[in-house]
Length: 307
Image 1 (spheres, rainbow, N blue to C red):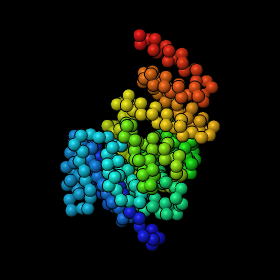
Image 2: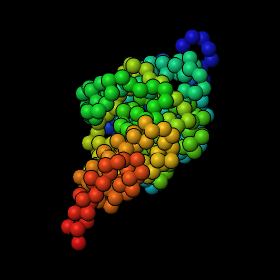
Image 3: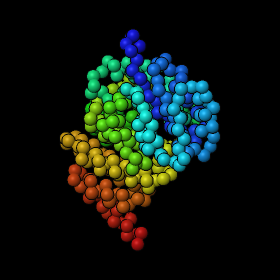
Image 4: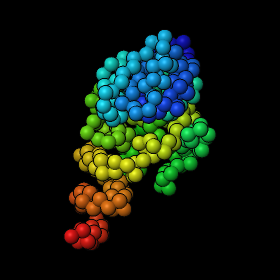
């Protein structure tokens, strides 16, 4: 960095059954070129050896480590750790992922070059397998066909509402953002979509076009199992975020972004036979979507077959 005092960065490291990857993940934090780092680790009642691996690794190091007695989920575990965090900037870091050595230094540098309107700095990310082999970069090799070639910055509300595009592994957040939002919403099954929607309404996002972290694709992880485990809670959480977004939309373009998202989520809910949730999406769509009625025959037919 340029000689200015390094602001404190808090890395909140969350673990749930990450035992094979924890040592490498923690080493990636300690190997940062940036030195002023506070590390808070939470093990969310893992059923494998995660807690033991963490305890062995952190011996003799200045680390706050907490073990949940029961599985509390990412949102609550993060919020509990954030309540103790002192950093000016916050990283939510899963202990099956990796940071590359200059990540924190470069993100802090961009924050310091930006004004207070910038609340989130995010980067490109490698997607890796369980053995650490690089599969692809997150951008532009992206799993949504509608992903734009230009990465949105600044006011990204339209972009995050209409389609997912940010890999949360690459995010650093100004602490005031979490304070204004009261952390993650603990009533939800997952945090990222809700965080993007609410935070992008109050701050701007900046992008660093460099690969500075790695997201590990683990078959048993929350993200990889989005539509295969705990489906109902996941689908309901997405609906709740779309309802929040309805109240936050200010312009016609934002309303059309909500229409695009609700159409997509309604199709997903129908695909997985959550017909009642499709009806809830129709209640949102009928306010802004002139062709929402095209979905109704499929819903009515599905409900009729259930009788």
